[in-house]
Length: 283
Image (cartoon, one colour):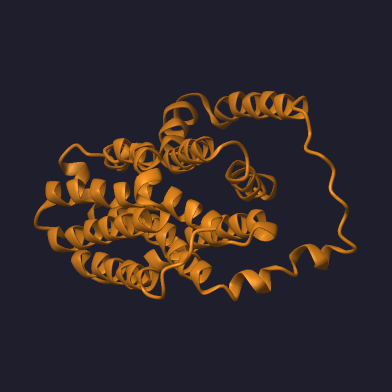
C-alpha cells in the first residue's frame, strides 16, 4: 500500500511536464481514465478471479504486470540529473508558496471532496439500496459496471481542452457531478433506475473534473514548483478518497435521499468555491 501510494503523484507530475501541450493533455486523459476505471475494474476482477480461484491467483498476474512495467521504466533513459537539494525539508518548503496561491486552493478544495463523495456514494448505495438492487437482479458490481462508460469522459476532455481551457472544463465537470448527485438524491428509494442513470451522470462529471483539475494546476502553478503542485494535488485527491468511508458512515443513518443530498451539498459548495475568485492568467 505504501509503495502503491507513491505512484500516482509521481506519474501524474511526470506526465504533466513532458511532451507538447497536446501530448500532455492526452497523456493526462489516459492516466485519469486508468486511475478512475481501476477503482471499479479492480473490484470486478477481484470478484471474478479471487472469488473463483483464490486471492493468490488474482495477485500473481498483477505482480507480473508490475514487475514488467518496472523493468521497462528502468530501461527508459533517465532525465538529466538535477542539483540535489541541501535537505529533505528544502524539497517541501515550496508547499507553503503553493498553498498561498488562491487559484491552487480553488483546485485543492474541490479535489478533496471529489473522490470523497465518489467513494461515499457507492458505499452509501450498497448500504441503503443493496438488498433492493439485489431483488431486481442488480449486484453491487453491476451497479458499478453501469458507470464504466462514463470514465471515458477524460478523452472528451482531451478534445475540448485546447478550445475551452482548463478552468472552463473544471467548472463544467463539477457542475455535472453536482447535478448527478442532486438527481440521485431526488430519485432516492422511489426511482431506482432513475438513480442508476443519475449515477452515470455523476461519474461522468468526475471523469471530466479530474483531468481538468490536473491541467488547471499545471496552468496556474509557477514553473519551478509545477511538478510539486501537481503531486500535491494527487495527494489531496486520494486523501479525499480515503475519507470517503468516514463520510459514508456519517450519513449511514439518514434516509437514502438525505444521505445523497448531503453529498450533493458538499460537492456543490466545492463547485461554488472553484468558481469564485478572479480569473487566473494562463502561465
